[in-house]
Image 1 (cartoon, rainbow, N blue to C red):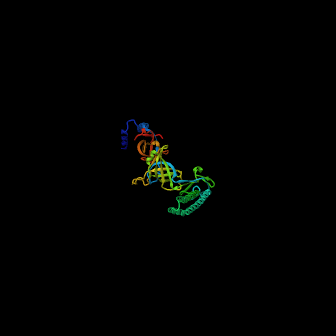
Image 2 (cartoon, rainbow, N blue to C red; image 1 turned 90 degrees about the vertical axis):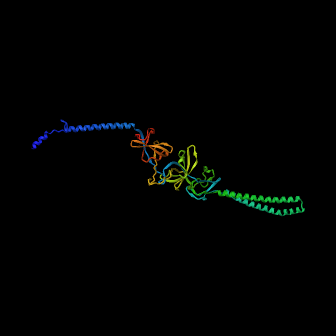
Amino acid sequence: MEDRTALLERLRIDRSAPPGVSTAGRRWRWLIGVGVAILLLAAGGGAWLLTSAADAVPVRAATATAVQNAAGPAMGGTLLDASGYVVALRQATVSANSIYKVNEVLVQAGDRVKDGQVIARLDDANTKAALDQARVQVRQSEAALAAAQMAAADLRPGFLRNQTQLKEGLISQDTFDTVKASDDAAEQAVLVAQQNLDVAKANVTVNERYEDYTVIRAPFDGVVTVKNAQPGEIVSPQFSGGGGLAKIVDMDSLEVDVDVSENFISRVHPKQPAAITLNAYPDRHIPAEVIAIVPTADRSKATVEVRVAFKQKDPRILPEMGARVSFLEEAPPASSGSSATGASTSVIVPPDAVQANGDSGTVFVIDGHTAEHRAVKLGLKDSKGQLILSGLEAGATVAIGDFSKLHDGVRVRITQ
């Protein structure tokens, strides 16, 4: 029975493959077909890639870099940056008002002084002698006045007596006129003596002032920044190029003066918040506020001067220091969707990546292999790049190339 079954199995025809084709042959034929299909697909894809690459616009690319907001989280973005210097609104060069020899200098550069404090003394030998002479002249004038008054008093009774006798006809008119002339002369002598005394007293006042000029005092509270004279030197208002004895600066009057381009002065207004960064301390951002815009322009530089006040005092702030001022937007109203930190969204990109049109502009953001048009709000452009206040996020890739060939959705090829 089993032999019969085996015999029947050997006699059964296999219809799964054509006659004469083995299983190994069928496998090779399938593998060859798959390979040919893969080659056809690769060739088609390569041709499509080559065609797309040929059509893509070649551009260079740059990354938008976040800009640290100098004002911190309390302020809005930076509208404008400008460079300038720290200046003192109140400063004075203390000097002699005439030619004097210096007897002593009581301060050194860096010393703090109070209003009225004596800082130097000049040689007063001549002024003291002139003052003593003026006082003697006062005493002489007082004596002359007393003598004139006495002479006038002696003549007055005789004048009154002659006046009575003239009325009674006891003396002639000529005799009375002679007595009257003597009385009038005595009265005039008293007036002259009084005026001479007034002149002598005024002369004393003048010489007292000259004497006071030999004592040099501080005109206000401040710091001595320059000391020009030493004891024994001869000084005058023109001495040492007009440098005087010393220079005193009121440190509470320090401010920053910057030149803002005429093209951007519209972004600045009085009371506007700002931040000052000193070149000496680049990591320190000092809150500030615009004092005023000087109402005139510099024709040669096409700039307008802006005065900016410090809102915080710092002993490290010194006159003539270089400074950079960031003019800020007022802080936007807080909202639930805003960031808790209030970080600024300002970024900076190369100037060639922006098509500028006043305060606004256009950039093309690269997303994959395509470019997307993006409108942005512009800030200051300087050697560091173009500041973008809004419309572009940090880390975005922007295209630099022929903008006439760029539009929304165009394929681009980054060349660098």
